[in-house]
Length: 562
Image 1 (cartoon, rainbow, N blue to C red):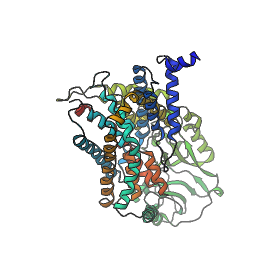
Image 2 (tube, rainbow, N blue to C red):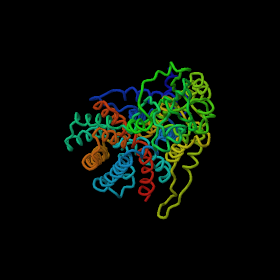
Image 3 (cartoon, one colour):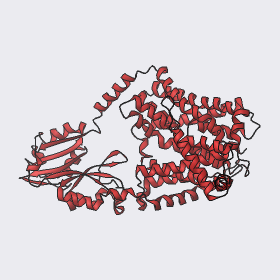
Image 4 (cartoon, helix red, strand yellow):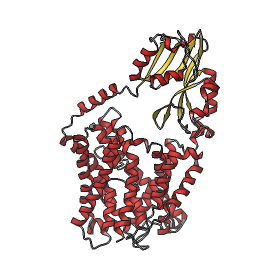
């Protein structure tokens, strides 16, 4: 039995350290699945498991804990940046500017409430109190990357061994933060006198009216004499409307048109356009008719093709010359779950799905050019990930000296990799960097990084957690954290509804996304059969995550070091 006792007590052995993390992570993940009132703490319970382990003396050398904590944080924030990067700029479109502005105001209001609580309830002469309130802030808004960024920034200000254990404040505020986000969102519903049935009905009406993006397919016969011997490109320019002509039947022969293809009286066309453009296109070209293309010469097929060949990454559709070389038209491209108009200037990325239309053998040739092999996507692009981490660490280590600040400002190992990951996710294809990772691979790497970080922080904070809760300011952290959670949600949620007239389900998603809180999104989705909560969440999530991490370091560097 001595070997077993030694395994649990020899803190500097590799076996002991591996066993410590395995136990803390496994126990935390399993306990995090327990639901109370339909709500669970999820993977964040690993933090509490780590605190319990550290409290009973089940720990590891501090330098090992610090290394694993920082490496986990880097991996976590980098994979987040890589995921949100492609949609970061697009999130500001289609009403997203207002939602993101409201989200940014809510983040600033969280910070303002935190400072108000700090000056009202705490001794400002104690230099540890403000850092602990920063930890409470990020527990209140359930944002773990912000905790990591603040922790990392504190290590540059406080001497080694004297860094405040802000994870204690985070742990005190987190459970009530999860409940407070959902509760305050429900309160907004009653404050604004919202009826869920009418909100869902409005969403249905909006979907029915949204003909600007809804695709419409029709078969037209050319009867307008003005179109005789005109090219498809000339028709585009005259109508000034987006449409794709995927097939032309001329004198019994079906062809895949290009911009230079000429139209003639009596030709039959297959047109794809937005629904609200259908009527003017129909009126200009000719009447709508029924056509069985399979009976007209060579059969045509429509096929979704997956772009998996790295050599295609970054090439535009115009550079591919698919209509002229292969006789195939691309009608739309699906990226990150979004349909994109297949314009010639659109740059393809690995992981895109294109809708190709043409003769079956020609479409198959295009499929082989694009790769169309799901197996290629199953292997993560490890080189891109670590190249990005190298650049992120270097970028995060660049010092920016500002007058009045005791130490130069650095983005650190949280902010640097996050920004680089966003840029690589958005523009990496221009440098032939294949940034695609499957959702499962991204989630796996992200969760591994997160649990390593949470376990390390918890074990390090375990020694002082009980003293903080029972003898220190633990109850104050719980109370002030609750205020930090609910006040901004009540204010911003009411403004979003009363002033900007957003649908309540969209507001629910926006509030959940601003707090980067999946349980709140899950609750919103359980009330709504439409995609409005998910749209609101995904619209503000990228900017919110960036601001949460960035403001954590700004608060620490500007205020905690004075």
